[in-house]
Image (tube, rainbow, N blue to C red; front, side, top):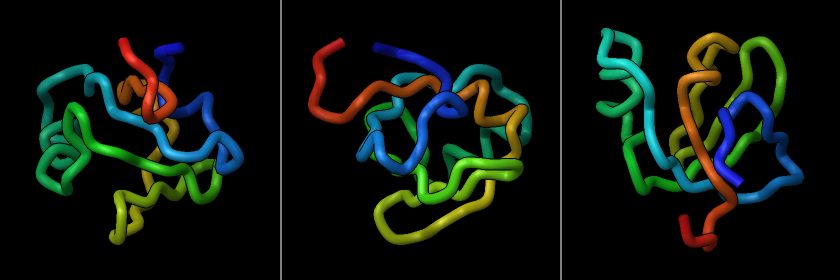
Length: 78
């Protein structure tokens, strides 16, 4: 199931990034921080903002930007 990162919570476990929609400064910054296609992310805290873990660094990301990060449960084939 591919869905926006905003729909997942900590109990969903590791998620694989499928795509980051857009090419503005915010989406480019996410890629610079290591959240690119194929990377693994975990939701640490769901909320406004949510906290996500990229395998070490943790970041707070606003709800609007979370809508643009498409993910699926890690280990699943697209």
